[in-house]
Image (cartoon, rainbow, N blue to C red):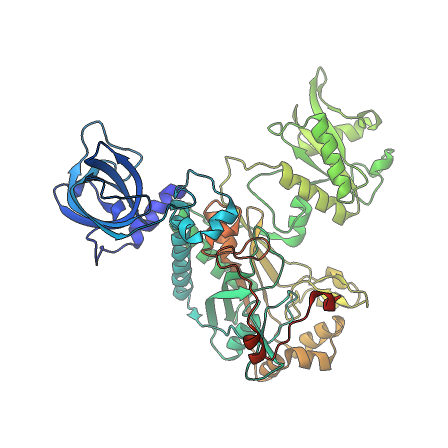
Length: 596
């Protein structure tokens, strides 16, 4: 898929070459035979034939063209050159079918060396594996590789498609501030000291959340932005300090309207970038997702749904199954589980908090399918039959069962499902889903106050609002996530715009009117002048583009990422700043021991 995408993205995004060159290397074809051309780029492979003839692979971001050069001209790998010559057919039997320009070459070449180059620390080739720290130390060289060229051009194309899609749906692009006020979104913020107001600070935005809600109060109606955001959190494969999100907000809309806006944009992007046609995106409630997949970001590329077995074992004599919730998954025969593998799964389940993990293997017998397990002899005949029927189990398949509290059975089986599941070749390679109706609250803090599941401006499902005092953990929110292949791509919600609902939510969260004014005063003040019903969404572009590119690490689709420790091997950042700069900002460095 990547090679096809690379060709499509490059050919569609290029205009006619100008300046020092008449053509791009990768766009020369048999239609150009007999034409004089000038191409510029980097010297790739060099094959010398005696002292007076060399074959040079010249590379630019569109591809490679072979140049037949009289004499070596002292050329070395990664020299930057301009070559002028005549497009000729390659001699019979020397065509390269793996190369877009493989039927032709440039002959009668004049070579102009534009820049010499030291020997690079690694080969500029996708076929050569290079340790990541080395790649990041010399990122400017790594960017010359086909894969990185493709990914960054795909990223630009995705941004362009998103802009076009949202503009066609009536959205206006607005830039929000990078120097902002502290916000109550939970993550640590990067702080920027003010030179002009010593002792005071800006923060870099975790998201444009409050700013875009103010735009709705301002009557912008439909806003979007490809926004740069920053969070001072620990890094991992799908997280960097700085990230990019497609951010939207719209007025006078319902939850379904927001889902429709984003779904249309996703359909537009996926169709153009991958050629995959998506007609719609399925919608799961949070409860359905947790019950069937044990997670709120299900990977739908394979089945292995969790099955509730509580009713089957309600009268069981098996002590291990005497629990509030009993659930299981069926592992297909394509994923055979040896006894040692099963023992490892049992140990892993216990590490996650389970008392144990029961397993049953299906085998064929004269009486049909039967279950083998250390627990099989304790199963009643009706229990055994019901278990076989519940899963429709076939020989060589395995059932894994966890019995405990419902949250634990879901979580453990969800994790085991993700570990053992393999994408079904009969299913699409990109399986999107909307997950809606998240709980408004995720629990209680140590003071007995409710904890918001999203942020304190999330509108509750009004059908549940009467439960906020008697059964608050059952109250659903008007919030929603977009997931793809087990990754959360983005989230959003309908916002509270009514004073009575907002006051009640603040109250149950333990936020006093004074605290609310201190933390959110300027937003609440804006709402007092007439706030329209509104809602929005933020799509993580780094994660989205990584999945479209077939990568499992967002660093592969970011031009200049940090390592997992937050370090930049190329610039050596972060670095100390000079005493003069510290003084200018009214800052005093503190020794590590002073923080203890």
